[in-house]
Image (cartoon, rainbow, N blue to C red):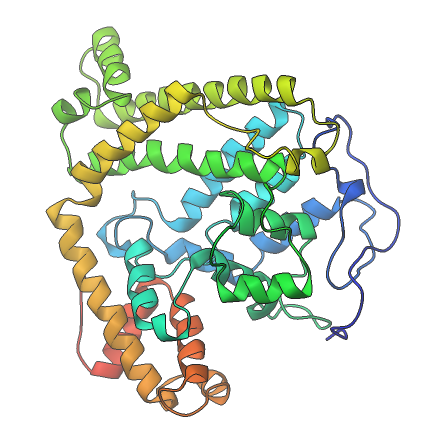
Length: 400
């Protein structure tokens, strides 16, 4: 590995893509990588970041990590990987219209869920509860640990050695970090400051809103397919309901896949159009001449309008009641939460149950070092592997 004291930066000539606005996070202005590398003659630094994320072990595991449903419930429901690909598509398309650095937006979108545990937010809640004594668990902080340390793909350094701008977007895509900062982020920031209290570049802001668009619209798709709410309930829902009625009035009764596809397409189109209109209006007022001025604007420059933000929140409230708190989902969540808690207790209490390379990194049973290793080990599991490990340790089959 490279010497940790090696200065951050970049080496060699830069490949320049055409057609970017002055306020875009331009690759030629990148602050480089923690460990300097020679530039590619055919790819920008952000294209290389995107490619490294796509080829990472952590990204491949997203294929078998649940978005809302556990993986074995069906092939049609979204996983973290399919969700991340959908977010990347929306972010790239919006960034192209805004003349942003779309490769950076895509890289941030692809990386934004890398740190998630098995079983969606349920697994994160269980792992956080089990590790509160050592700082808890935060999926954004764990994503940073993955790309900065836990991925072992290169001879000279741990992690993926991503650019400063991609790391900034990964950590701050939801906005500035104020108040208590998760310890892994604070430790990295002390080594290479990410300007945690400022807004990130526009590409990361667009990626965050693209995440909202993707999960909001596609959870309607998954919820309808799973029978968690009916068409009649959806017709009465805010924001989605009026658009669903328009489809029924125009086309009559459609097969479910056509109806869902038409509805999701309209919802995404309206949300993206509003995002573009509001962001262009904010840019016209702020007139940022660089990505530095975007970060110093003091507020988000990429945004939904107030009206669309209210509509989106109303639809989130509908989904919370009819989907996320559905008795079928709650029952599965409770079983998954118990599985993670029991698995953590067993592994932290007896680290010899871990694979040998993980055991070697542990301290004494139950101490902080061991708990940290077990936290990383469980966070990296897929849904299926967590179930498999539970069966191996407790000698019983489990089905969520």
